[in-house]
Length: 314
Ligand code: MEV
Picture 1 (cartoon, rainbow, N blue to C red):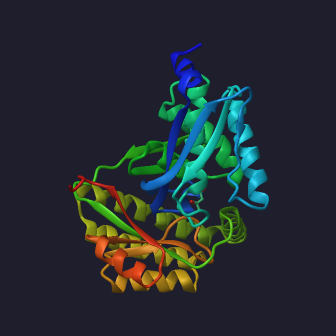
Picture 2: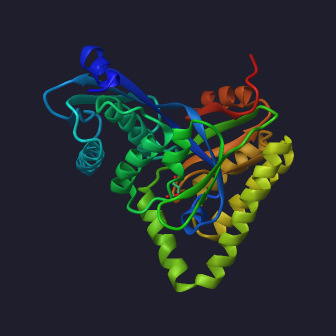
Picture 3: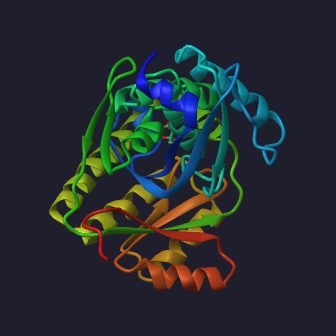
């Protein structure tokens, strides 16, 4: 029995999964194009206590079919870890089902606890493999960017390769890269929007292929802008990406309204993040988002600021 498992049996253990934002390239990443994503400071904490069997305490706030899906997802991850004797509970401060990677955060947090409980070091590779089992239950055929960004816990360039593999490269920003995340309107499940786009791609592969190619190029340009500290160029790339997401019918009036609002408040760039659709999270790149966060909060808009990369300013 490993020392990790010994210590769990004595004291229990915990694992954190941060939420994520996709800065550039959502949806096109499903089709093998590049994307850029990073972790949020908010996320999900999983706590494990020793138990006679492996189980998850379903959050009482989770209603409807989501309960069964979470139970199934956990069962898959538990099986992948040999069903260690641990009772897992979840807590968190991340808005759910708005494009901020709540399912990936749950998956990564659970994977960390299950691996520790089974006596294995929760290395990045192991956490990612177990979390992917859960993400497949939540989303069907995810690109993998959400749980990878959460498991890595740092800004990454990501490109899916054939099979389940992916190219993952950490991105260093010489300047503080600060975002404002604002919530706009209601949103359906990710798989709905991914499925609707898949249908259009199937019918008109060449037209959508051209759009995807351009989104992939934008992700490459954005990664270059991040690494050279050119936040103005990064903002412009984000704006153009938003235009292409809109062309792919993944935007909506509440999203467009929030995008325009953030730009008018000084955002260098603004776009939807995640699956988009009817509503959900919109991100704005700001040099100093704190003042705008306070202003929007006073208007009753749910929002938060987060530093995604670069030197931490104390
Ligand atoms: C969802 O956060 C991101 C999408 O690109 C889906 C995926 O990558 O699996 C829309």
